[in-house]
Image (cartoon, rainbow, N blue to C red; front, side, top):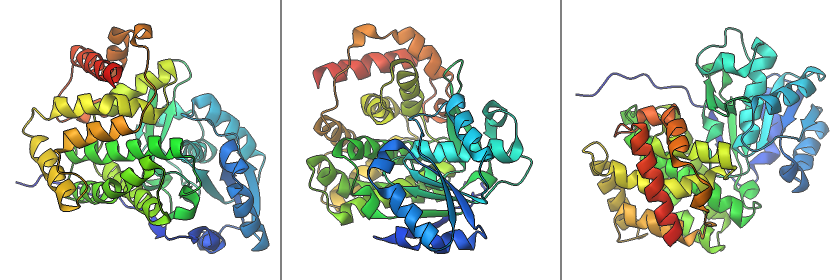
Length: 382
């Protein structure tokens, strides 16, 4: 029997090389004549911010730029963005960059329109007032934040990563331009690609999955699998970057209509405590979690189906778990000194993460500790 479900609305997806050039038209659709553009220093150095600013100003749209977004934004980071936003006059948010820029823009939208602190919005649907229109323009192919109504923000005191969601926070338009993704460094493309892959794999077996989220997860996997090889080899074409962007966005829609699992729950404490880049942390934990879940009837047929897709597409004759191991090995992620890790503390913190509650195989702190032991044993052998 199919369990009852209600889908969540998706942003209007605009895809194509050069799509950024039509940004002024999409701003006009929101009714805005002035925008607040949230980005990071790297995107500014790459020239994308100036390109967007000129497009908008030449079309008569006033632009205020905040280019100090930090990776894995904290409540403090969001407060700095809000301070800049409060001194500007605008009617629309634009985020240009990776997931951190989109999280910061969404979080600032919460506080600017509804007040309070980010921890007040931990959970879903807690914003009582309207929020400003939001346009998301990803320059990486990983988080899928452009298709989600959540802002991920870490608490300043406990470092807990809070998922603060509301239907009013989702982007009105998600603008996917492969030309932007093609300029990212290979190292960034690799790590964000691992994140997107994990989103497809975890949402596909989440206890919250629905028939709709399963369609998104499988479609995402199809787009990502053929493009990951060229990305890792450093020979990706514009078409490959397009597939990565679509795959990441579709995975974002899969998450929006389901949830994630233990790989993200275990990765977050590594980032919070040891500043391991999120995609790197995911790469360390994903094989161990897949093996852990493969012992359940809930995940086994899904993994078998994804193995068939690999064969159908001519990507690999290997089963899914072997292919993922090979992909992560090909990433040549830096090894991590396990001697600095307190697996017991990490396991406790992982067990408190919201995403782990939706893993197809339930976990206690002891299970997370075993996952860390296995993951870092594999990492040491890589």
